[in-house]
Image (cartoon, rainbow, N blue to C red):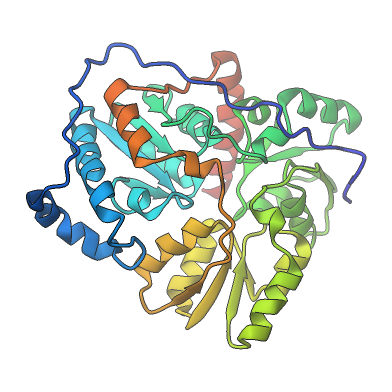
Length: 361
């Protein structure tokens, strides 16, 4: 049961605040960023991997930054996490761990590194800090926010508890630590149904993504209450747009993320989480596919699937695109911006994430 119009999102609240400079790290001399014939030869094998998604004219600019970042992260004992929505020069050329937001944080906990550089948005860096409290977590641009995460605050969740006493609150990982801390458990788009079904209650609050909650409601007998939060990338897709793709090519395959509106998901041939979509392409190897999600993800999946033609609808996330090779390098040079979580919030937020992880296990 959606409460559209009754529970309203508050986009703009809870926005990321600028981070700080990590202490006790020695300054490092800024590297030479000249593109020389020697550097071109050294970087040629890496460019061979990404040449069909990075134009030749762009590589001379990217290559010096890539070399400098890969050398500096060793000096800093740092690991770079890159979300699937990062551009290919980041995702394939400097990241140590790549994947969706939760997998990044979980994998980082297994790495023997002192520093995590989160190439994603602010809530992802917070989640990395929650699961890796002893490590220094940096984000290259502290203003890299998220329309969905900013649609709800911890105070909003406390209001929901008062309005719906006794109703379990399942919160999407795409939220701030403050919101996670006020929740019973977190979920991802891939395990949301399992998490909802884990409660005895016949009614569950699924926040903040309204469309994800509506798509979950079609897969469970439980009554699902929603919040009107949306991802500004996925909410722009329409069923009519997908129908036009089919009119142009009846053989095209369409796969969609469950953050899309329900009529878009219904029009798709497959719907799944970020990792689910990637696995589907790898396993099925469609001749031509439209991935109804953030545009850079198609570029990154294309590198590993050269025989698949990707038709790119190209809805870009402006927040993800705040992360660049230049500010990744600056982040490592100057150890900024550091992401911290209030200890009073961190314990409760970590518990909500760990409940989800333990449920999966």
